[in-house]
Length: 282
Image (cartoon, rainbow, N blue to C red; front, side):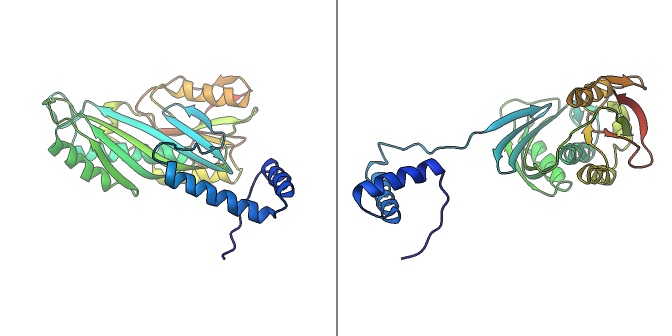
């Protein structure tokens, strides 16, 4: 026989001991018999009867374009959603080379994953375009991402005159790190909030800079980091202040543009040169 170790809840162990003493057998023998009976039931009744498996209590929470599922034991699965429309090489698009569109999308994925402490492992790409156009974009996007990419669907019935891409990214979130802004901290903006036509010509925030800022949060030298989304700088700063349980004092007017071209960091002092103080949490 092989020795197998397993962990059981205290209540189950107490029940095992109660039954084993009643039938004058050891706890190990009772467990062996229970497993044999369970396997026999699966083999003979499994076609008609599928016993339910007890799942741990799951905590599901959303943060803008992401959903995280916390399984406990510092294990959390995060799903992020991205979509782009009207930019590309189609008839009605804002004319942008497809490779540049792929680069912009990949940069957003990297920035938003980093600021959520998520390590992506797979991405599902769906498009509203014909298969040839979709496959070309898929191959280009793969060049900018370092995780597995799967093309899930394309438009094979209608001829579309406008580009549309949707990317769903799944990854594991580092639960040891929390975005926890605090009252009394300043809010610093890194990068430039770019409008659509500006982003075509200019680069968004440097991913290497975001990586350095994330390390500051992990090391406790800053409290939080958030990508500025299309709802604007004011909304992102307001969210940080709300999480801190404080009030926001803005020192810069609101700006809106393309998502993840800039980030905000909350800290007592500017963590890295190049930031702009845009507000304070009081």
